[in-house]
Image 1 (cartoon, rainbow, N blue to C red):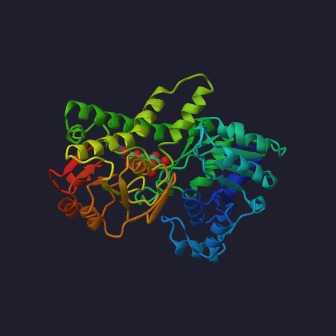
Image 2 (cartoon, helix red, strand yellow):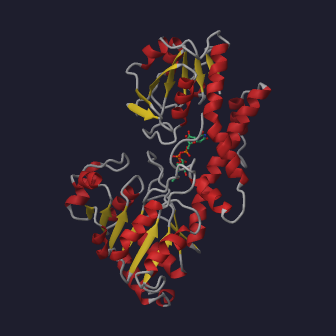
Length: 445
Ligand code: SAJ
């Protein structure tokens, strides 16, 4: 045993030994797009895994060997459940057998725009009866710096366990990008930050058996902030390029050509593209956890606030541009028939959370347009009082429409055929040019 391990508390040494021999039981709380792939990866590494979710329906689906996460094949779930390597339930008490537990529950925003930590608090308090000596708890849910120490640590200490001696606690940000196959739970480097150095070591030992690269950092706060930097970086740069689109429009310059030209710079530049707004459950939300936290220490995170303001205004800007394009053809929005292409928040996914398409449809309806949509991944969508189904034949509907609005550019849509049938296309994604279509019927963001 390395001498430095010998300097760790006995409970840490015992756990690290069990993890290195993969003779350990690991729990995963929250079996969503983060927790289920994690549970499967841990089981594939040889751990016995206990998955706990508060949804009876999800638990029963998994016990039947049916996966509801596209990135996790049902056959693999069925195999792991059948061999007993993956046990699925809804009872936190099952986790009293676990040597480690990863918490992968949602961290949404409340209607007020404040962080909603209720899922983390509920998971931590539900876990309390199962806590025991020689155990490591790892929070994965994206949250503001300090959450692990302020919201989870007290639950562990209230069980009369000394964190860093008897029990260990760390934060490890999830980096799951649904639908991506090149970077997965196993090969994406995993940041680990413990409440104490021993906590970092124990948590790293657990994940090191299942993931290709584990990156320990000095504290839970560093790990929490790392994730927020990653996603704030995206939100701010998307906000910048969206503002570039607004500026180029004012100057009569083609922003897409400007970006393509800037992207020829082989260093010191990273390409982002303007769009109809910021969707998904990560990028629009994670930075607001950080700006909310900073307000509590009387600091105004101006880049985050400004990016959020620009990004959330993009749907309104798109509607204004559509209105201008129709007006230029002597058509009011009111009474026009419009087809929105793509309501998912990004190509290749079915997720409509925070999707700008929902705002665009709502705004166009408010202006009196008759709005349909087509999205091969999203058969129906309800939002703020309206309820639509994806049209069966987008080209036919395009032919009957006054304008088609490309909001999300899924692959596989026949953009050249669309240019032949739609009288007018507002393209918020530069999809037509990328499909090789040059047409005076196309107006770009
Ligand atoms: N978007 C733009 N312009 C861009 C890039 C994105 O308008 O240049 C829009 C997208 O259309 C979408 C939103 O921003 O509506 C977010 O897009 P995203 O590419 O960031 O995709 P997400 O939300 O799925 O982000 C996830 C994140 N993964 C995790 O949080 C673990 C993010 O950290 C990843 O970098 C991102 O996937 C990715 O790279 O795909």
